[in-house]
Length: 315
Image 1 (tube, rainbow, N blue to C red):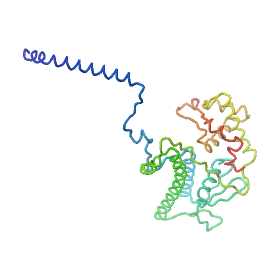
Image 2 (tube, one colour):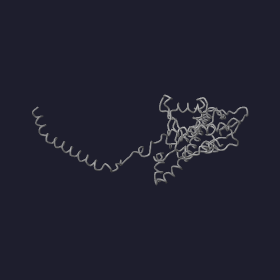
Image 3 (cartoon, rainbow, N blue to C red):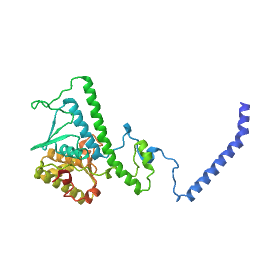
Image 4 (cartoon, rainbow, N blue to C red):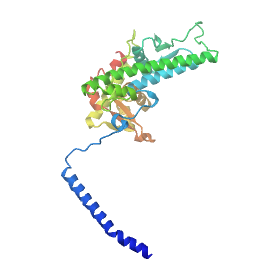
């Protein structure tokens, strides 16, 4: 015990000196920070995520929602054909947005499907479908080997479409890099499948649908969607907001147009699917009453309200 006390006494001056030096150092750093508080601080190294966003899974570039929706529809059609190997019919009444999206897909790749216009909608035929019998539009694949080959061919078709969509974004991205004098990022971005963090994916060009030989959408249906969107924008503008509770706006629209809520919600879904970069529903809560309907008022106001949907409806 005596030895321990002796050791403590012998190192005590050193401890006090260290404490004093630390205090002086802290005081110097504090005063220095106060003097230099107006100087901008920077982090000398940032991770790839901090610099350029989250790395994409699966080795693909990110897609804007309006392109992702088109890719999703293509996948559904391809998988449906793989299971059933038959033609698909889309009706105006039940598949309003799907018809427009198919017309957009055919603009990207005219050979993607064969299409026939009928009075109530369209019929699309997969290029792999061979109809040998007029009374039987199915061509059943019998062997597992044939099924595997078909699955691989369909996967290549989806990958090809994905490449076309990616190229649409990359053209716009390249223009953006030129504007900000950052062309050297293109090679780096292609290596990691990322876009510059200053680039807005929604700036990617809209894909206009091909024009039909004759109009299958009733003028009343088109006008209702236009009136619906115009009223929605004006209602938000009057209040100077970009967010409103979903339940509230559905009730307001239902009263204004004298329609049941289910029809209002269906129309909202149609417009959001066609214009996802300008309108969206935030569903962060389980409770539907807490959902928020969001409008990008700035981009909507820059467009002519009378043609915002006409470009999709070919009207």
